[in-house]
Image (cartoon, rainbow, N blue to C red; front, side, top):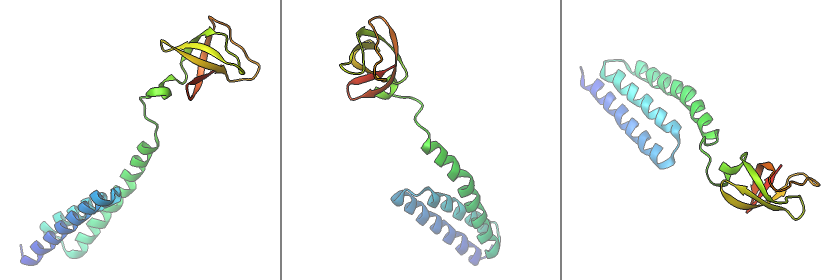
Length: 146
């Protein structure tokens, strides 16, 4: 192993460290993938690969990571959380009408063990006490039912 090869792999490690720091500062995940590519370039240099081989390995690893990991990360970011909490957890649940519910004055329902004010989703629709209704959405402190 020559000093030139050792210097090259050290430069690749320094580049990977700089990209890693930039990743933390900017929170751009692509920089992390480039840092892994730089580590692959350092390993190639350490194993005796020439400069062209090092650059090709760096480029190939970086491009493959960006092409594979980035779409997966974007898909996970765009998905809604699977565990709904707060008012989001109440949408779609069934409730029992306690006091007549209509679209005008509204009324009261028992939802998740609590009494909520409610109004009908459709104008002219009414629900009598004892009827089961579905919660469509929560509008402030009022459940919209159908």
